[in-house]
Amino acid sequence: MKISELRKKTKNELDNLLLVKREDLRKNRFGGFSNKTKDVKIVNKTKKVIAKILTSLKEKE
Image 1 (cartoon, rainbow, N blue to C red):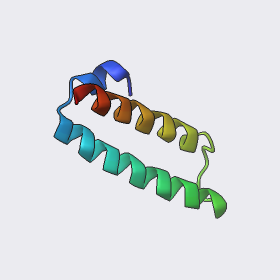
Image 2 (cartoon, rainbow, N blue to C red):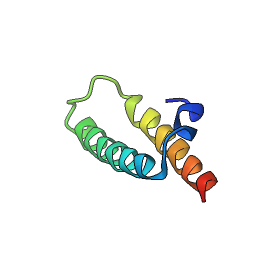
Image 3 (tube, one colour):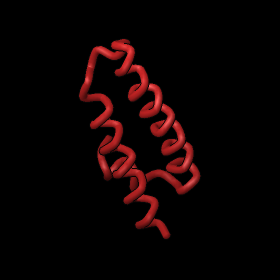
Image 4 (cartoon, rainbow, N blue to C red):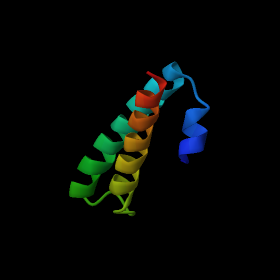
């Protein structure tokens, strides 16, 4: 997800997206311990998306 796409979203949309991505991160992190995830880079990608969302939220304040 690009930062330009995030800047177009409202604060409520970003909050909801943040909750979804944090839940995805939790599932992928613990799924990795049980060898259920095939893509091991998904955790790092999700962390980067969360950071972009938080940055966009700070800009909106």
